Image (tube, rainbow, N blue to C red; front, side, top):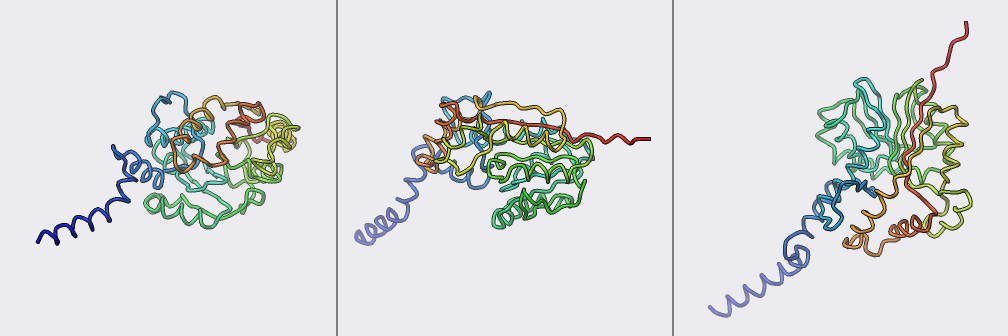
Length: 279
C-alpha cells in the first residue's frame, strides 16, 4: 500500500513540476503567458501614466492598447468612416475601434497570410457580429483596393518595414477619399545619415525627413509629426528585462538606438486635400 502511495506521489510530482516553474510563487508568470498569448497587440506600447516600478501583464497589455488609442484619437473617427489598417497583425485594434470608437467599416490588411488567418480566429465573434469588419492579405506597397475606397488609413508599428516607403504613401493617397486622413505610428531614423548606423537592427530604415518628403510629394497637407519615444522605449525596455520572451531579443537594441539619438518613435498625421473644381 505504501509503495503504491509513493509511486503515486512521484508520478504526480513528475507531472506538475514543469508547471510549477511556469506558475512561480504568485502565478504571475502563468498569467503573463496566457494574457500575452491571447491579447498581445505586438507593439512597444505607450507607457505614459503607467507605473513602471512594477509592470505586470495587465500593464503591458494596457500599454499596447494605449498606443492604439493614441493613434485612433489622432485618426478622428466618425460613424460613416471607412477605415483601413495597414500591417494589422493580429487585428486586435478592431475590437478597440468597435468598443471605444466608431466606424462604418474596418479592413485589416497584412502581408502575412498566417497572421491574417490568426486575426480571423482571434476576432471571430467580432467578425460574426460586424459584417463590415474583415481581414485581408495584401502588401502596403500595392494596396488591393479601388481608388477612393477609404476615409481613414492608419498603421501602427509596421511602417518601418514598408519598402519603398514612398510607394506606401502613394498607395495610401490613392485609396483615400478627398479630405481623408492618414496616421502612421512607427520607428524612423532621425536623420538620413543614421540609416547605415542602424543596419544591425534593420537592413533599411526610413528617416523622418524622408517620411515628410514622401507625404508632401503626394500632396498631403496639414502634416503633423510628433516624437513620442519618451513614452515608448523606457517602459518597453523595463518590461522586456523581466520577460522571458524578450530578455535576449534584439528588439531591445531599439532602446539603445533611441538613447544614442539615432531614432525616435513618431506619430505622423496628414490629410488628403479636397480638389477645388474650376468653373
